[in-house]
Image (tube, rainbow, N blue to C red):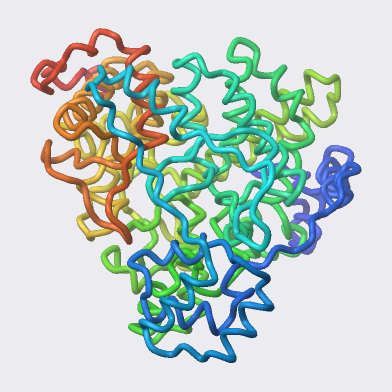
Amino acid sequence: MADSTVYGNPNNSRRRRILTWLACGCAVIAATTALWVLGAGLAEPSPLLPPQQVYGQLYKAVESARIFPDDKEFADAVPKSSPAEILSLYRQEAPHSRAALRRFVTAHFMLPPDLLPPVPMKRLPLTGHIDALWPELVRHSVTVPRDGSLLALPYPYVVPGGRFREVYYWDSYFTMLGLMQSGRRDLVVDMVRNFAHLINAYGHIPNGNRSYYISRSQPPFFFAMVSLLNETDPAQAYAQYLPELKREYVFWMQDTQYLTPNSARRRVVAMADGAVLNRYWDDSDQPRDESWRKDQVLALSTTRPAADIYRNIRSAAESGWDFSSRWFVDGKTLKTIATTSIVPIDLNSLLYGLEQAIAQGCERTGDHICAASFHRYAVRRNSAMDRYLWNPAQNTYFDYDWSHKRSTGRLSAATLYPLFIGAAKQQQADLVADIIAKHLLKPGGIVTTETHTGEQWDAPNGWAPLQWIAIGGLARYHHPELAALIACRWTVNVRNNYQQSGKLLEKYDVVILGRPSGGGEYTTQDGFGWTNGVTRKLTVEYPQFSSFNSVKQCPMAIPSLSHDR
C-alpha cells in the first residue's frame, strides 16, 4: 500500500508528490544537499578534466593508432612538461605515423608500469602469501605528479594490482575484509578516511582516484566499509561518518525533484506508481579514457547514436559489471547495451542498506526525526523492490527494464544482494537459495550468470565479491550449509590455482576447474585485491576447509532447501 505522504492524492501532480517525499522528515535531504554544496567548510575543488579533454586531438591520435596494447596506459601517463607546451610541440612536429606518434609520446610522457606482485623465492601457504602481498599493493598519493590523471589521497590505500594502479571504490570493501583478518586494521581505517575525503572533495566516491573516473561512482559500499570499523556496534561508526553517508545519499538521489512518472534523470527513476528507485549512470557520454579505442570501435559497429553507446558503456562501468548480459537488450551482445534502462537489484539493495545505516547513525546522534525519515525511505524502497524486482512466478529477484516496464527475466548472482543486505523476507530468501543451488552453484563456486557471451561478467566466470555476497546472504537467512558449500568450493578453487601458478587472480572459471578465466577487454589480472580479501576472510570463517585440495572433499550433497524445510 502506498504511503500517502509520498504519493498523495491521485489528483495532485506527480512532481508535487516526489517533492513531498524529499521534504519529508524536516527537509533532511534538502539540508544534506546544502551541506554537500557548501562542503562543510571545505572548498569545492577545481574541475579536473580527463586526459581526452586535456589533450584533444593528440589523445585521439594516440589511442586510434593503438600505440599501446592497453588504452589505459596513455590515460595514466604523466606529462614531462605542461599540457599546453606538449600540445604546441605536437602541432609543430605533426607526428602522424604510428612510429612517430610513439616516439613523441615516449619523449614527452612518463609511462606507468604494471603493478605485478613479486613472486616469493619460497612458495608460502595461501594465507601467508596474501599477508605478504598487502605491503606490495599499498600505495601513497598524498602528492601526485602535476597534470597527471591520478587524484591525491591523504592516507595509504591498497590497489587491486596489474593494470589497476589506483584505488577502486567497490573493490576496496572486499579487500578490507581480508585486511582485517591479516591484522591490518590500520589500512582499513586509512581507506575509510580516504573515501570520506573523496566524498567531501567531489560530492561522491569516484570509480577510482583518477580524473577520468570522476564522472561516475561504483556500487555504494561505503556504509559497509564504515561498519567494519566497529563490527559489534556499527551504529557508532555510522554516527562518526554520518555527514559523508548523507552526502553520498544525496549524490545517488540527485534530481529526484524533477522526476515525473515513468521517467529517469541521472541515477533516479520514477516508476509508474510514483515509487523512486535507482539506476547506474555516468555524467559523460564520451568514450572512456581508459578504453577509448574499444569504445570507438563498438560505436562505429552500430547504427545507434555514439553518445548513447558511450553513456551505457560508462554506466555499466559504474555498476562494476563491465560487461554482462544483464545490460544487453538481446541478452547476448554488447552492441545492444542499455544499462540506463535497467533498475538493478544490487544498486537498490545497497541503497536500502545506506538508508538503514543513516537511520541508525541519526538515531545514535539523537536526531530522531532524521532517523524516522530515513527508516521510511528504506521501507518504501523495500516495498518498491518487492513490486518491481521480485518475480513471484520465478521465485527470485530480477533486474527491471523500466523503459519497457517489464522484468528482464535474466538470472544473475545479483539476486543474492537483497539477502546480503537484509531486504528479503525469509520466504523469498528460501526460494532464492533453491534457485542458486539449482542454477548458479558450480564446482568452483557461484557463477555470475547462466549466459555465455564472452563477456567477463557472464558464465563461466566467478568473482570473489559475488561469492562473499552469496555466502553472507545465505548465512544471514539460515542457509548455513549452502553458504559453507560455496565457501568450500571457492577456496579450494583459489588454492589450487595458487598452488599451480603462484598467483591470485581477478576472476576464476568456476565451471571447469583449472581452466583459465577469460572474456572482457583485457587479460585476467593478478594481484589481486578483492580475491585476496575474500579468500583471507573465508579461511578464518571456515577453517575446516583450509587443508582441502579437491572440491570432492567439500560437502557432496546439496543441502536441504526451502522445499524440504
